[in-house]
Length: 449
Image (tube, rainbow, N blue to C red; front, side, top):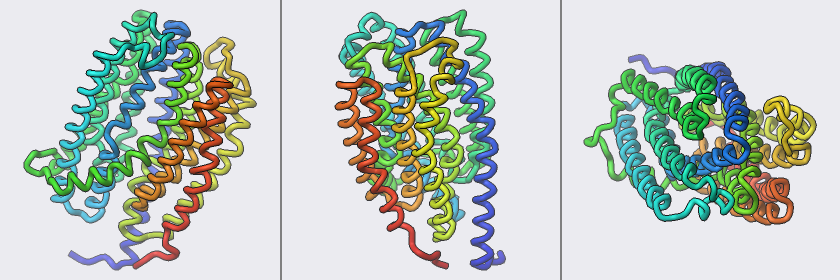
């Protein structure tokens, strides 16, 4: 086989990354656009049909599911990185070994987490978990906790197999399956929620359909690359230990960081206030989800591209990408809260067709908190791609502790607004300053041939 010259090989790799990023962004417009459309239908319907209190029950369920989303302890992100490197090197044997090891490790960890969660649900009163004001809805909440937990564990196990899409820069295929699932979920929800006005139907419509589409996607991916089918004989114990050690850093960096602060605020509101207040914050969180979907269209395919560029030591490309993301982050931190404060209340009224207690102060406070979370996310993706896991995880841990303390101080005196401002102040004093400095130190000044 003819060997490709170094310069030409670098150009081909850059062209492949550019094409993969472009396809991922274009298909994300359909996939994420469909997700946004689904939420636009689901949230007003759910609040109108369920009422403000039971809508708060759905918000409490989302807290559980997001926390469960951290239960892989970073193994999935470590698996994706190892698999991307093996794919960049063209080593099929290593790809199969990494996939088998990661899949069986993840399945074992998630089954243990599921058993622990079942024990907690069996023994601890719902009022203790979510707040005393959820007492009238204890039976309904407990049933849906069981259902939601099972759905999310299934999603996470199947999601392990879909790491092959990231490693092969095929996120556009992932997005196409997601777009079809969104259409099916929206149709089921729109025509069914009024006939079955139950929280469990909302869970099945939104997340149950997603389980089916992810499973079909994973089967299609394995059919394309049969050497990736998980096999017990390919389980590699030393690699498993390495994934655990590296996974803890990923757990903090990409699991805890984007979820902990937001869900801590939602949990605190349930402890100190009412399910209605939890429901109001859930509306803000969904607005944030819309905006984050636009950011995620770039950062999700960017993660394997950064790993590939780092493996090839293409630091010039990494510096260009960092410069673009930094500009996006700064503009968002400055303008995001102002825009949400000015137009957010009108958008919420238009969306729900009713007046809700979410004015400029609530929208602006959440906007500041959310855009600082995006700033952290952008830097975490860059640093994870560069392999600076341990140092970045240290900053993320400091931020997580500070955000929880700031939100707790703020919620006691000024409710939801105080919690958002408290969490935002904590991020300004930690990750907003420390992450850019670490990133500058982590990128070499020149590419290595």
